[in-house]
Image (cartoon, rainbow, N blue to C red; front, side, top):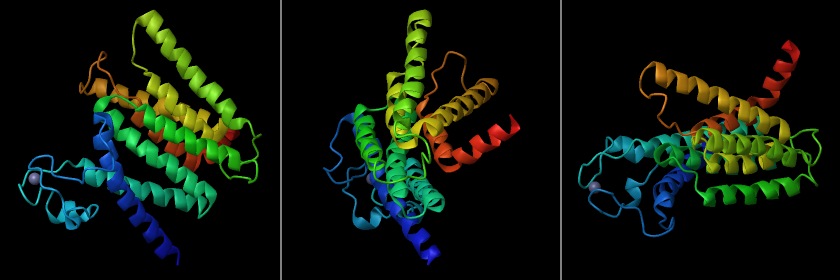
Length: 263
Ligand SMILES: [Zn+2]
């Protein structure tokens, strides 16, 4: 039974992931995400259902368009697989519960943010707003339901999270702008933490920020040491926010407990 549920959730993740691919490709170009039907960007052939099976079409066609043989971006199977795995991980942590559905919604938006920010160095406002809408619904539900994400924190914990995390990042962004004239930390990074805090509450969103800074810092150092990037090059912050949030919603409470114990 458990295996069947996991399989179903994984497949749902794969299928939704193929929709996320469409969003990732079209939103930065301000195109509709419903129309037109998906076509090969190279030869323009409208893709048939058998070309659109997540991951499998890519593998069967060895990563090439069936019609013109031009290579298909690895982004497609990567987004599909990560969506399947992320959904499965959220299920293993929260079971079938309101938390599961809400956190999958948040992670869906964040998977899209991850790839758009990586490619274009922007976090579109539409995604932030979609996140806030879902976050407010989860926030309202908490008045009737004791959720496992914020646990015994007070009802206003998500609001505290917004003030602390987005407030802190806003301060950093403004100081960076005024003192150094740098826009390394974009407003998108400040804004995307608003829905994240609405979903995670104070404790877990502060932890998500720490994990973001930690993973971003290590990766930045690595890129500079290996000379893949230099000190001046821009590194998108969004992907680290997504990783930090994901780790926090899966393992946050254990991490905090562990940290308090060694303190
Ligand atoms: Zn083609």
